[in-house]
Image (cartoon, rainbow, N blue to C red):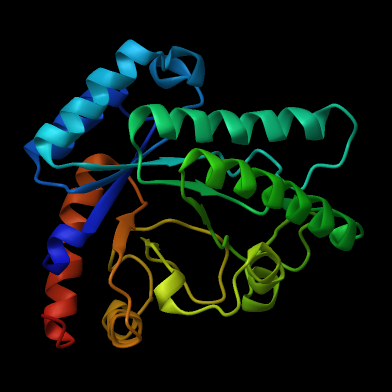
Length: 252
């Protein structure tokens, strides 16, 4: 599969599930992420009939579907009742993935409020262990997304934005080392190095995508990429620009 085919689009909640599949097929996008939180795609709407139709459409159109949970849901929640609800939410995504035949579910490590980092990390890791066990028993694959660095002065910080934090979760969930053989999806957006969290189209920030492709591909990554910036049109145009940059950098 060539690089262009490996660059997908994070549709999120921009389109209903069925339209997302048709949109992807029309634009020859092979990989898509979809969120099932609200509106026409809410988890409660994914019954067996709808799932069967969507699964058949993906198969017919050769679309590889993934699900993406909301980063706003704090996987590291430890408050009574609220933490239980978070766990039910994550397991509901596993159930939906099985129904839809989705190839992966992107989850997060949660966030902390500076002073409670250790407590949050422990709570989140234990929850992810339980959800990973549930996913394994049901034949679903969970991907852990490393999130963005927040400004030092911010009270709220995403977890798993450093390699050290990432390993805290991976090593406990039967993973011995962090290498590209264990990476399934690389999310793409431009930004300003050491700046605040932004999701910009290629060329609007100062990220060296050529160097990024050389590094990631050179280290053996053979999974898919996922554009995550701007509108659907922005992500389509960005796909062509990224292929151009990669070719300039010597990536076939």
